[in-house]
Amino acid sequence: MTASKIFLYFCLSFVLGIFLSSFFNFSLPVLLAVLILGIILISVLWKYKTSVVIGFCILFLVLGIWRNMAVESRILNSELRNLNDLEEKITLAGIVSAEPDLREKSQKLTIKTEKIYYETRPRSINGKVLVTTARYPEYKYGDKLKITGLLEAPPVFEEFNYKDYLKKDGIYSVISFPEIKILGQNFGNPIMKPLFSFKNKFKEIARQFISPPQEGILEALIFGDEENISDDWKNKLNFTGTRHIAAVSGMNITIISFLILNFLLMLGFWRQQAFYSTIFLLILYILMIGAPASAVRAGIMAGLLLLAQHLGRMSQASRAVVFAATFMLFLNPLLLRLDIGFQLSFLAILGMIYLQPFFSDIFKKIPNPKFFPIKTTLSATISAQIFTLPILVYNFGYIPLVSPITNILIVPFLAPITILIFIFAISGMIFSGFGWILSWPTWLVLSYLVGIIDWFSKIPFASLNLNNVHWAWLIISYAPLGFLVWRIQEKQKLKFLNY
Image 1 (tube, one colour):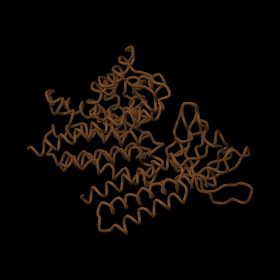
Image 2 (spheres, rainbow, N blue to C red):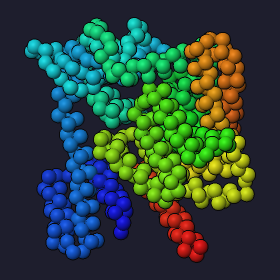
Image 3 (cartoon, one colour):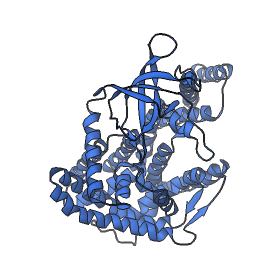
Image 4 (cartoon, rainbow, N blue to C red):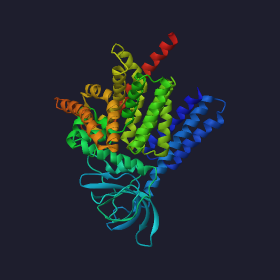
């Protein structure tokens, strides 16, 4: 066993510990018993390498359980959370710690609390609160606010657990339409403020020259913001299996990165130049959209996959992705169960690692010109979708039957469309005349996306709806998928040995 393989087992054990702790409660005596078992295997059977590795895997399993339990305990003991639902107004002072989420008639502010004015004199308090208030006046990132209202626990709806959705981001309390007083400005991170400013200016240019629904698709494609997409269009994206274009996901970023890499190679860049240029553009893109946590995680995974391909070590890519995911889960173990975006990004990357070579072989007769890499795009998209489909079905209850066709018609154009949109927006910031001129080709390519999605969504039986999907579906789906991956890996090993 190599050192990297042993470390992989340690990481998987840690993740398994988080997974088990997410669904089951473990008492302290049970954890101590398991911990002692691991220590015995390491100390008593030190001469036997396999026993030592198993012993350390047990220790990392316990570490994963402990890490998740520690975060859950911190939530339960949160002073701010324990003030929920008192039916008595309280006053908080805090800073707007994230970009305000602007809606048609309201705005949502993530407040990092600093002080509380309740019962006794003002005292320090740490936590996050999601505040919903009127659309105007607008508040900005870094504003310090004094907020008076009812502190409540986030609601749990019949079809959506809003409480868990906020929990993964460290938000356990909400306040609706409180009294707000501005105490100061510019208290945020000095790096984030210009990024958000650029993003808002970008949106202003888009809204000035592009009309709905194209403008809503533009914002979703670039920023992952769906606020300007109607429910009708969200359903169309779901039915056609193209909802991923409205999210800054690992799948989307990775596929776009691969297409940009191929595009640069087509222009005559050396492979090393194309790789570093793609990484630079990837980082620049994440910064330009405000560096949301989902984009940073997706960018890390996509960057690791590009690096593995660049080094010619795709066989090691899965380990690098697992290492990265383990580190992210150490920082926030709640992502594993509660963040669907994290799950989809991780599975999409693994799908491209394990299944893309398989489908590339199947599609070997399809032409793959550099200027329009059909085979590469097709194999990458199908590989990612196969790995993510069970999770999508479990969470959303539908199977998009036309998804392969719609994605073949859309995904190859995502990279050039993204580049064109950025050129259009930046040109419009420099001189509005440039924005007006470039808005026409931008509107045209967005109309192509809108047309494909709209047309395929009207096909009878475009998607198959499933209600109340049981968790056993995941086992039934991923067990044969895992077996398929194992068979593919074994065949590749035989080919290598025969070669």
